[in-house]
Structures are given as C-alpha cells and as structure tokens.
Length: 381
Image (cartoon, rainbow, N blue to C red; front, side, top):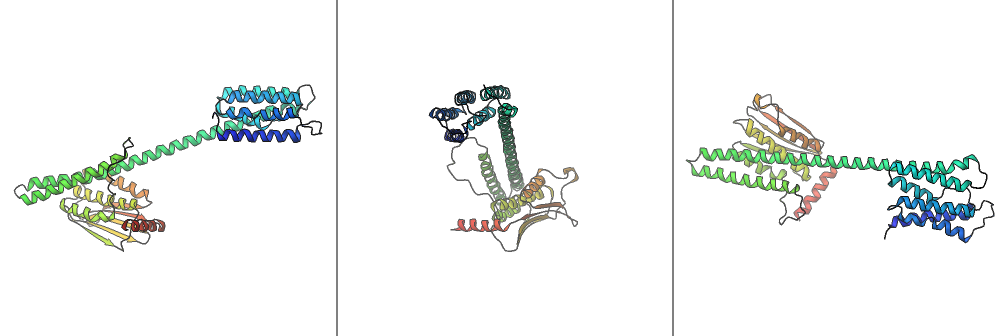
C-alpha cells in the first residue's frame, strides 16, 4: 500500500471533522441545508491526505484546490478545516523552509480569495486564513526543531555509551595484561634462576603456562565484544571472575613471589556480578602493583561484608613505589573509575608504618542483595 495505517486514520479523522463542520456550520443562511455535492466535495478533500508523507506538496495543492472549489460552489463561510491543517503541517514537516514559505503564502492567498470572493467580509475574516497558515507552519517547524534536538541527544547518549564501553574494555585489558604478564615474567625469571632444580623450574613453568592460558581466554572474551560479525560462538563464554575467585588470586600471587593471605570478615553472601567483578579486579590490580613496586614484602587481602556494603582492602609491608615511578598510573585510575561506577569510595596511599594500602568500599542496596541471592539460588539448582 502507498500509505500507512496512520495515514488512513489521519485522513479518516480529518474527513469526519470536515463533514461534521459542514453539516452543522456550513450554511451561512442558518437554515442548515446540506447538499450531496457539498458532502462529496468536503469528504473528497481528505482523500489526498493518504499520500501526505510521500508527496506533501501535491497533497497540499489538491487539498487547497478542493477546498477552494467547495467554498465557491457552496458559499461556505470563513473556515480553516482539518484537511488544510494536516496538509500545511505535512509540508512544514517534510519540505525545506523556502519551499514551505512559498507554499504557505500561496495557500493563504488562495484561501483568502475564495472565502472573500464576491461578498463583504470584515478585516478579521480577510486575514484569518493567513494567521491560520502561519500558526500551523509554526507548529510544524517547532516539531522539526524538537525532533532534531531529540535526535542529537540520542546520538550524544549513544556516543557516551560507546565511550563508556571503550573505557570498560580498556580497564579490563589493562587488568588482564598487567596481572598475567607480570606473573608470567616472574615465573619465567624463577624458572631461569632454578634451572639446576628441575622440580622448582617445572612448577614455575606450569604456573606460567596456566597464567598465559587464562590471560588468552579472558582477552578472547573481551575481544569477542568488538567483533563485527553476528555468528554465534560454538562454546559459551566462561563466567567473569568474582569474590569466589579471590582464593585462586591469592594463590597465584603466592606462586609469583608475593606471599599473601585472604581474610574474610562478616558472613559471606552473594554479591551482584558487577560488584563481585569489581572486587576481584581491584584485588588483582593491587596485588600486581605490590609485586611490581613493593619489593620483598607480604600482602593481605581483606574482604569485609557489611549490612549495606562490601569492602576490599589490599595492603603490603613493602617499600612502595620509587619516586621515579610517579604518583600512579592507569591501574589506580581504573580502580577509581570502577568504584565510582558503583557509587563507592576508593582510598589508596602509603601507610605510616610502611607499605601501601588500597581500600575500596562499595555500597549495596537491599534490592541488589536480594536479586543476587535469587540468582545464586537459581544457579545452584
């Protein structure tokens, strides 16, 4: 069909309003005499509106000509019917401003001539077609401007969402590369230094292999997000790490040369996946920084469950970063961004007694805790 259901409804509505207006107000003598010809002309003026989206200018021309014909034959009083409103509005919405201005002037002139032809009218009646056309054109232009602003805001939101996703992927890649590559470097150095002890070298190489395999798997999951194809994966992606993986993270740190312990305060409870991933990444980045900058040291990861929040603290008793290392790199920035996304706070800095500490406090709403508990129950079934 060359028109839509909306176009048909608009045409039917305009036809109904015009017919009712003609039946009740179309006779200037007040005797309310309705003719068949008048009904047909008034109804026919709404038929071109079916094509108002594809050909707005021809539609307006047809509507105006039919209205002028009906006005001259039936001697209708001054009017500006629903079909004229829709026709002028469609031109204002679809055509350039210059074309709209010419069409508006021509429409107002024809309507004013037909409605004042061969009869005396007041000055208000003579300018009413022009005012009506200007009012409808102004409404169409206002709607155009509003839609442009909505489209611009929608594009800004889309660009912001893309930028946020890029920052998230950058944080994930940084965490993965920094942690696993540092572990692999330390394991490779340990294996080289213990070539005379095959068992120690073998254990270091096994850890190096496992860390490399895990890094490749996590990087593949992130890179899959950037693929442009729509082909489905043959195997489902592994779940993102969370607080239940902190034991493995601490064990990896131990094997990489940084002795570490995990302490849990409070009753364990399910956390939302995004919060669990944030806790894991903060602990991972803090342990990686400790291995890189603390020197010979020990580290402690403390996970604290509170009624309305969860906190993770990573502290070490090492020497801390050297002055040449600067105030902090992308690791601390990434951790701070992660915590800010959840409305939490992050504190990082040297300790008075020596060492370095990172403390992140993430708030939890009751709704999030309840939803996480339900999800955890469904997964355990």
